[in-house]
Image (cartoon, rainbow, N blue to C red; front, side, top):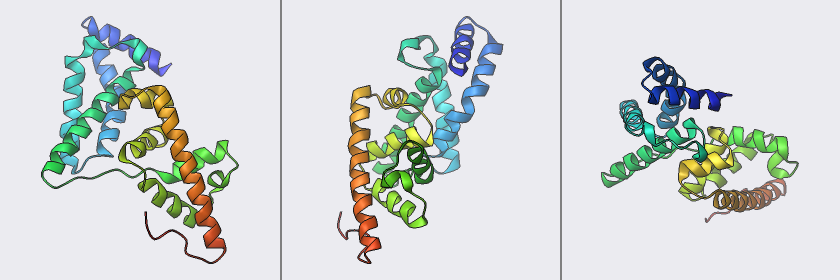
Length: 202
């Protein structure tokens, strides 16, 4: 329903309806601003980037292709590219920040669909171990988890935002989850046996 409404409003905005554009902007601003703010500091930079994203949106409004996904996903892809460019510039000046994956929500979602060790996370130690393991994943894989569990996007939408094929995203998710489950199981076993909770080397 939300996606249909956004597409309808976008179509009306393309034909010159200022009211439709204002309504569309009002619905899209929060998710986009939140996405950017979670990945960008200071706040002023996040606000500037969000403004840039909507400038790009206005400039490219006629390029939206409904077959590529929802209007929000299309805009989040622009936001993702803007954030990546921003951090590239910051790294060139020796400053960068990466958002951590929301492991508590990740654990809750996986628990609802799984009865393996990862799906039975209930203790603070488990969450700390999960956070440590996720932080060791490649940056792009961590961003996939951010989009899936933090932003609530489905696999197709994650693929669209990152500019990847859907099959590639599925494979990376599966590989990362196998790795996390295996390492988490080993970590929990060591802890229960009274040994070191985690390996000392990555």
